[in-house]
Image (cartoon, rainbow, N blue to C red; front, side):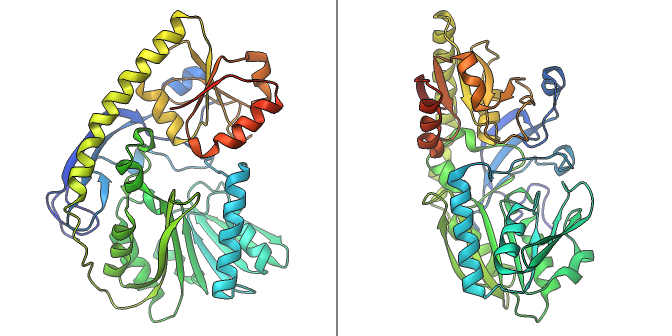
Length: 389
């Protein structure tokens, strides 16, 4: 797609509407340092979100994948969260039944540590190949009656031989800087074979529409609505057979599709511009409100912790002035514990450490997990004030 430097990467429109800018944010929420000093020196990037009223894609025009560092050690898995595990088991079961994925060859693009691939291969006795730049070294293992091969690297034409009976890509496509180019290349690689695909992404437009200001972080360079997501696949040469919101109602979007002839998106996205205009105003308002809250806690010598060290939590902490009030971040993922938050430098601890700290307040980076977090706090004998960031 030959387009101006800041043209829409979903359709090539030359002048998407810029509505939100942040001069410096942590460039990586998945690779964490083991010292506060190193964490405070983390790479940063810039955000300039632009909305395309032709195809509906919202994209960070200043995204540079080279400063992110999708490398071994990158860890953002949600498999340690009961709420997510229950959800992803349902996705696995549904895909196996819908596409008869038993004894089949499955390719996962951007598999991370391979958690989902192991699940779907174990449950269906499938043979899976996962490709991801964060994999440290190539490996093979048996899972149930199936197998999983993990290959380090970014998916490209050189991996065409691994396209088998089914392709999936979960929580990765929003991080790919040239989404249309990527999909058209994948469509070309599939050729005339009938290979169904399942793609799932964060429901980015919903978060902007509902002004969830901490949901914006650097790696996530694409923000889709359902219509924009479906339209991109149609233009790239896929027939979308099913598409909807998922995970706790509407947190994610998914598309199921098969190879077809490239079509056009008939949806008009002009109505999205008034929606995105209010986002920057809400961001400024929330920043001001939290500055006042932290100052009040500090004046009263109160201690708070943030629960959740992922993208939302890191965006929240890096956006606010440094404060002695929030000294720790809680996370149930053991692979993130004993590390430190980029830029702001808080230590990430296990929930079991909280009785030693006895925080006066717990700030939730994601309200989805409020019920299970409240239960954990009760089990620890703690009843702090609970607020949502």
